[in-house]
Image (tube, rainbow, N blue to C red; front, side, top):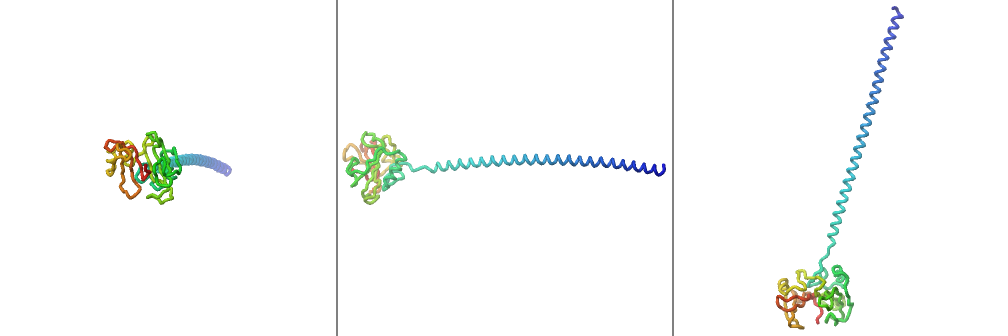
Length: 256
């Protein structure tokens, strides 16, 4: 073949090698691009899904916790608002004791019975309320008396000296209760319409005597400490166990 033939054979071999190597590089490049594209897409999709799930869970938890906290706080506040009941006691009415200023006693009673039906204002101590400590007395009243005369419940105020305040200080010193539509009782459960037997059972120290104005009726008194101006008293239809209590008077009120 000579020198020329040898050169031709060498050239053909070189070209064949170059052609085979070029296909490998193209295949390698294509494969890398494909791999990069798939990996990137998969990673982004996974990250987005995770963020969405986390945000949704956090919002739901916050909302639920807020609702539960608000509900619990409101229920506690409502319960705390309660006040002592209006009861007839030897030393006052419920949470208000004898010696309290008129505005305090009237406001407290109004919370239970509504606005008073009548306020006499300051009048002469010898008045419709009886013979009261001089010089003046004031009666604030609720509801009609079931007997048709006067009122069911009266708070009595004085400016006179009592066991609660010295002279000149306006203050609550007694009350009168005659039943009817105004429903009141003592803490122990004594009320207008109770029998004297019930009264004696509730108050073993109860003393019952004839009424000085009508011997057929009775006068009852519960006074565990005669040295102060605190007591329970009233009238009854008689003096026997079956007779009924017709009134409850608190404190040292006005005489006839």
